[in-house]
Image (cartoon, rainbow, N blue to C red; front, side):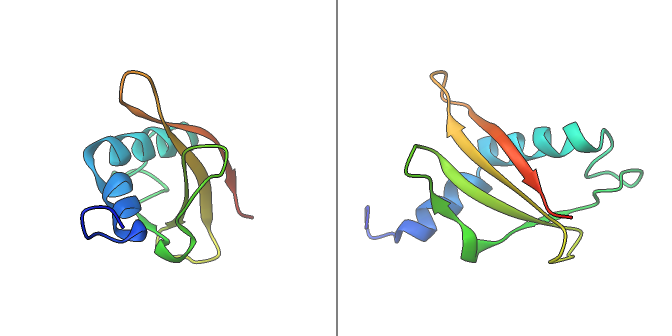
Length: 95
């Protein structure tokens, strides 16, 4: 625990923070240029908190549930870059 917060709370804070949301939106727009808008196929995402974990090689593994469909997920690793921004390092889309 860091400052009384659990590891899970700390991970959620990173992913749901401004940098995390920006990196996720960027990732989704690679698949759907209109993601997170009315015209997009990807309308919304939810972070699967159960599968949120630190990658032993660095970064944070995040599973996104797309449009409230648990069968449709995108899993990525968010890494902090030297400039302090979060970037996704590849991703896997469920079929």
